[in-house]
Image 1 (cartoon, helix red, strand yellow):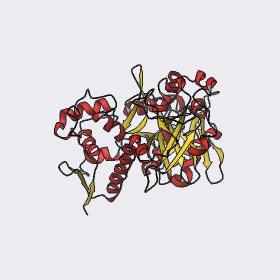
Image 2 (cartoon, one colour; image 1 turned 45 degrees about the vertical axis):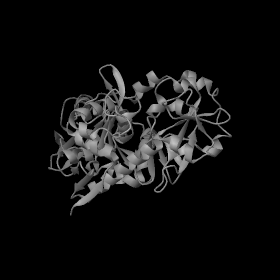
Image 3 (cartoon, rainbow, N blue to C red; image 1 turned 135 degrees about the vertical axis):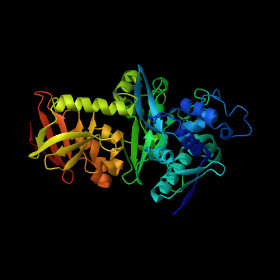
Image 4 (spheres, rainbow, N blue to C red; image 1 turned 60 degrees about the horizontal axis):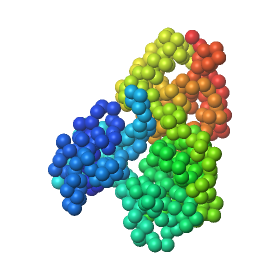
Length: 434
């Protein structure tokens, strides 16, 4: 059965040029603009009233660059050579990217429509088109303010011409946080990179302003988190549960929040939280949130090397649950990194990470490719931390949440394995042998 989906022009353009992208599947606006101008110049000019809209040297936050910046989804933070930067993708997973490359999505560049025989891809296209619409609408807060004359905040264009900073009549400052994607029907993900980077949050006591969209209203709910809460923990992503009305990060930290109206009577003005701002160091923080390298394939190889050296001591055979592992198969299927093969012929998927929370950061819990996978991390076992990291996702994604965790005892170098019972939040150690 053929499905037809109307696409925003910028999403159609990103998919067209994605097949010319690097294999790493990460993007920034400069890369995309160069490719777009080279490959599809006839699709670039998005506004008739701006002759230079198609060019690479448009304004820093306007033109094509601005369109791409609202269309991309933040995926993480990378180190390339000696520099650090965020990296992005088309949608919350690589599925659209791959589907267009392998021909399961067909584009009509005259009508800006996508066609597929796959119902799940149809839903995903609609989902990503909706996310793009949310990001674009929230980026144009000037239009919102024009339509809502009684809104209690105004733009501070004198100090922040290109950044969405608002202030109250009492000189309380708020930076609008960017909506990134929906993790599920009830959980929204927000991108904190623009808040955390640069000197603005040190120069001004700037609280975080979140706009949580609903099905029928992009500007449905406004929430505020005090700057001292953000600066003390520095999360790259924050998640909002629409049922519990709570914000949390990938490590399970809960962040106190207020409605916008409440915050005007609670949070400090532009001179507040001085000690927290003095202590805040973006250069140090980004070292903690960075992933190990740009190339995903290199990351996998590096993680495999760590597993081979640190856990296996370069011996591929070991026993667990009384069963003998006789071989390791490095997976190339796009799922878990390694397949453990047991003596009886059965197999077990094993994901390799440097840190426990990378499993969540890489969004493996959202894909059935990681169903019933075990997890190895270079980190030491700490059940409280593991519980904080994974508990928010258990109720919705239980089959894709690891129940068996492998790690190395840093004191004696011995192999360790633990089985978690997520229903009662307990765990037990599993015997592991040579």
